[in-house]
Image (cartoon, rainbow, N blue to C red; front, side, top):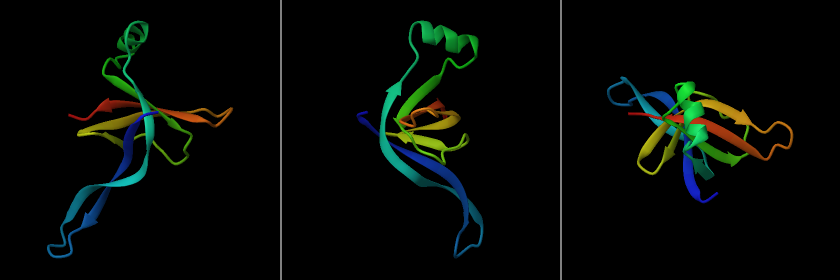
Length: 101
């Protein structure tokens, strides 16, 4: 795990001056991750499930991460579509994401 990522959540806050609601990203958790882009057989399996643009982030086990949150890696933001924790040994959590365009 050599890549630093931030797990973010979209929050609506009111501007103190204008009192208008604005959406902003708030960092919930910052951690190290291993990034996997499907290649070969996994790419074809993902294409069958219409997930050809999926990116997988493997992080240490963490509760409280839900689909709909975002992963920020460098200048790119990814939407978390599925969270798959290792329920048996509780060592890792896999986040299935797609790039936000």
